[in-house]
Length: 316
Image 1 (cartoon, rainbow, N blue to C red):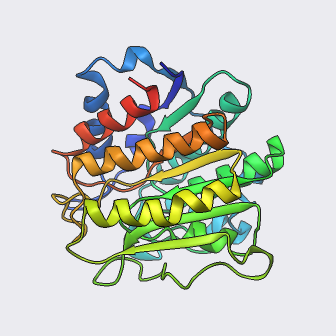
Image 2 (image 1 turned 135 degrees about the horizontal axis):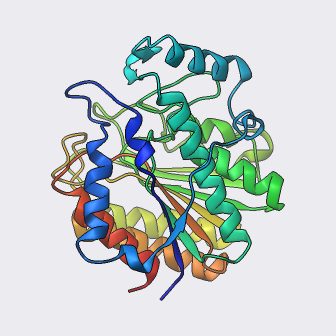
């Protein structure tokens, strides 16, 4: 059994969103039930949530944007930029806690206290751009973690896998010209899938050309297409890149029964994806992997999907 860390904090639920808003505190209730019922909590190593220092946030987001986010919460404006980004007075502090907890997970991983981790955080992060909140996201948790690993722990090659059904535009844009971060995303495109970026010809720029890779999934496709493209695209790319640490944007909204997409991935399909990622971590990164919650909006499905995800991390 692997030593798997769990980042979870009741304060993540203090980010309140309005009625009918998909990214709600109920998501964490569903996540926790998926860990409590099968008795997995006792097998996990707690990771503390502490507020991240602004110097790490500023490695990805502009100081002006950070200040505007804080002020919008203090003034209780209700949203940041658009109705997609609902906020409350506590949202800024909760977002700092989420980032800080993920950085604590990075420290515990690099110090050898854990082998991998699952970070059950909200708000999610992969849509957040340098100067803009987008798609329920305010601070780009995964991108900040990657920069932290580079600068604090001298990790030269960071691999990011994003299997949320929506393209991680903010993460891609952060690292498009960085040859030391490989960003791979598999997501729905085209159709109504948000945000419309992540086409297969987008491969990075300048010195980072070749370290961005997108696999697109058409509406109505499911397990077979995911298997084909992950084996064809992700596996050989990481075999060549050889990441020292793997970060995962774990979104569960590609499920056939999740209303946020037209993709038809099954429960077993999600497990297969995570098993492949863990094998890549074992092969290239000494098992070092941190998974961070992004999307997934079916309260009925999340408990089972999270249970399976964590069991795979634990190697049960």
